[in-house]
Structure formats: structure tokens, C-alpha cells
Image (cartoon, rainbow, N blue to C red; front, side, top):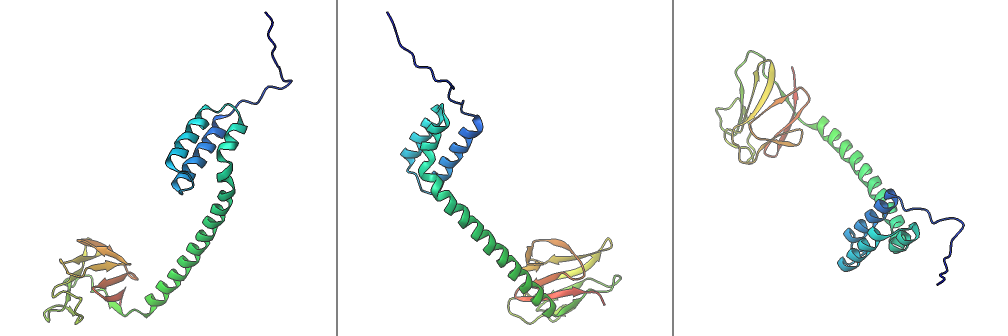
Length: 186
């Protein structure tokens, strides 16, 4: 009994784990972006896991590669737009920060400053978004501390809402309801 075998001069290069992982990643991304149906994705994943040569993987992701260039260009464009937006937001923040009225920090030995709409407060704000007793600003352990006193519309420091107490510094932007100030020393 005779059998015939074909031998190539050079055996096909073995598929590396990195190549397989790259193809699997492309398939996952294609499915996540809606480029592949669920059934197609599962079938291609199965074929990719059983592939023995790079050419087999290339066939499985061939229709996804052309769109990857568009996706990369889109990601670059959105990244650029995001950076431009961040710059313009920073400029806007800096511009408004300089225009904010100053709120002078009380002297270190003084009583804490009560802030709100009530006439008995040390700082009376008449805006309807400010609670009657909104917040308190005082020195504790050598640091300035701003405490929200359960206000309805919130207290913010540098754009972040405060719940409870927070340490503040000269130059911080504080907000009580819709009213905003820049903290300053003397």
C-alpha cells in the first residue's frame, strides 16, 4: 500500500498567541460596534480559536480592518475635539473666576461665618436658591472649613457639591445655590 505525502520546503509559520489575541480583540470590537451579528461573532470566535495559520485569522477580520482605519480617524477627531473643548472650558472657568465677587475669609480668631437668607446670618444672601441657614465658614485646626448646613440647593467648592464639611483655601470658588464667590484673604 502506497500513500503520497506532499511536503513543502518551508513549513507554515506557527500562529502566535499575540496574533490570535489581536484577532479576537478585533472581533470583540466589531461586535461591540455593531459590525457583526451575535451569531457571526460567535462563529468567528470559534474559528479564530481553532485557527492554525495567520491567513485563517486574516480572513476572519478582513471586513473589519477597513473600518478600523475610519474608527481610528474618528477616535483621533473626537480626541482633538475633546482637547479643544477642555481648553475652552478652562478659559471660560478662568474668565468667570476673575469676575466673581470676593468672599473674604473671616479672621482666624473670629466666630464662624454663617451664610444664608436669614437676617441673623453673618453673610446674608437674598437669592431664592439660598437656604435660610445655608452654610458656615470657619477655622478648625488651622484650616478653613466650609460646612453645608443641609441646604436645599447645595453648596459647591470649585464646581463640586459639598456634603458635610470640606477644607477650603484662598482662591477657591464657592457656591451657595446659584450664587458664586471667590474666597480671598484680606
